[in-house]
Structure formats: C-alpha cells, structure tokens
Length: 217
Image (cartoon, rainbow, N blue to C red; front, side, top):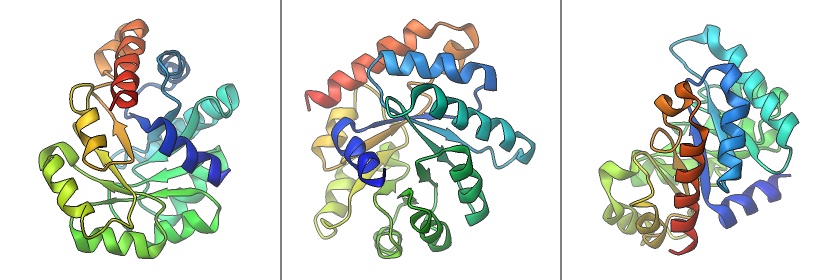
C-alpha cells in the first residue's frame, strides 16, 4: 500500500486538508471532493482539543470504509508516535505533520505508512529526509513563494517536496512548475462556510478547477 500512496501523490498531486469539520459532514464532504477528481483526503487532529480526537479517528475510518482506494485517507497534524498508532488503527494510510519530528517519522515508517512531515529551512528539510520522510511538506508555502521552493530544490533535488499552505486554484500550477511534486490544499478548497451550508457542489466545482490546473501545469 505504501507504493500505491506514493504513486497516487506523484500522479494526482492534490491532498485535500480537512480541519474542524463535524463528523457527520465528513462523508458528504468526501463525496464532493471525489466527484471533483480529488483522490486524497487528510483529516487533521485538533491538538487544542484532545477530546475531538475520537471524532477525527472515526472520520478517517468512515472514509476508508466507504471509499477504499478511490479516496485515500490520511491523518494530519500528527505530533507524537502515539498519535501515529491511533491514526494507523483508524485506517490512515499516510501521516502528515506541521513539523519534522524524527520519532514520528520513524514510527510512521515502522508501521508501513507514508511519512509527510513539515519543514521550512534547508536544515529541517534535510533532517526530515534523513529520518525517513517520503515527502517533505514545505509549510507555509504561499508565504515563502515559488522562488523559495526553487531555491531549495536546487541543492536538495534528492528531496521530494510538497507545497502546503495558501495553495489554491490560481497558484497551484506555479508551485508544480517550481518543483513541488504534490500540493496540500486546505481552507481554499475545504471551505468551512460551504461545508456548514451543505453546498457540496461548490466544493466539487473548485476541486475540478484545481485538478484541471494541476493537470495542465
């Protein structure tokens, strides 16, 4: 399955990042994303509210059960090896973090999952890669711009970068052109107002625009 997840990132490139969605909205949201051509969905832990972890894990499990390989489910904002274990048990196939903790990366790899830690500086990126990261999530990407990604990629061409943070349908192609092998797209796609209103067609439409932008890049 590791190879399938890595291949999916390299081919389809877009991971939808779901933060704070109510548990009963997860499956309709997943349906809307899948209808728009998005094939990966990261459901994040809210570290400020540990009491919400159960809902996060149930959301991952529901997506995994309903969609299987059609929409690959992962866990985001994972900050400890124990949370890696919880996510794996719920069915997460990949582990995403805002930071590069070698213990989290190693536990992810030990469990046969795909590791996507976050990093910013060249040193952090190298440490993440050396610890076993499959991809390094450059975060926050839009604040740094495509020039920063190009500058990093020149000496660090052996590292597979994802661009995350502020990615949308207007800049997605530019980040791919700058060297990102995949993109994490959060609130610009998984719009909280649209989720609350149940206007799933808006999410589907924007997902299609993102998919088109990436394929045409």
